[in-house]
Image (cartoon, rainbow, N blue to C red; front, side):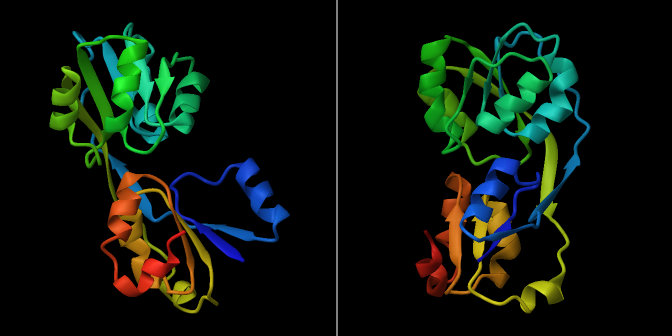
Length: 208
């Protein structure tokens, strides 16, 4: 089966090998593209930083290298990107919603003021996360995402069924017009699941 991986970053060698073992071919088709906002990041007075993605790390790494506070991440790939840049990580989240991870983070290290470094649009309700955990959060929106251009004709002539890997709600919305009810849809993360619930009911059977 053809597996269409829609993450912005290419699939890992491990993922490609796993799919090849079961006879699947993988296409890397980014659903989204991003544009840095160019905002200034001043971490003075913060005792923690939360990084929402590897892209956020790459845009903030120069500031983070001099940061003396604790660093949390949305998931393991973001944590690996930090470590590759020599930046220590206190804990990586589950990628099932950062708001759910913060009680665990705060058991590891009590903090008061968190710099939330991520895309302009974030799935978490930052005011709610701050209230539930008795912390202060300031959002540093270091990039914006938008739908990436795709080869419309190539997608419309696909032989189905295919499998889709979606990692965000915006990715689902960007490519939902190409999903058929016989396809398999793998959703990673709370925003992807929420977006797919709002697509046409006829596609709901595709969710796995």
